[in-house]
Length: 122
Image (cartoon, rainbow, N blue to C red; front, side):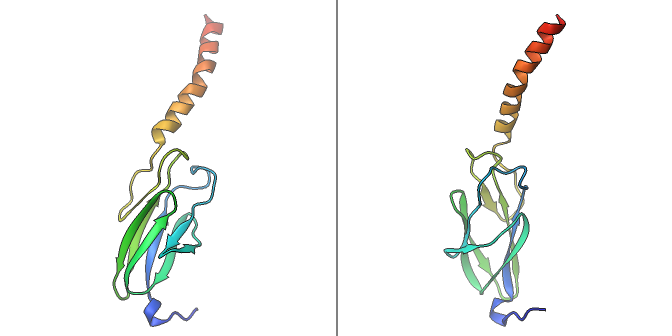
């Protein structure tokens, strides 16, 4: 068991959606009040003092989070499906951006193969 001081008994609980397979290659840098935080996919508890804190995913989105004494505030980060879209932060789970681009790329890659099969069967 670790000893946590009473002034740090509250936290921001960051929920990162997705996985290494469904997120563009590259590290996601998370800043809490300007300091870099170590995070992973799933849930990461970031201990904080009472008050308002700035949570930022560099290059994507930022949100101000008010934390009361003894509280854990849930914040959700939805990374984009492609590096050409932006990730979003919010107080509830939300859709990830870029799914349409993934479908378009899949269709574009499958189309030539389908045309060859159709011509071969004709």
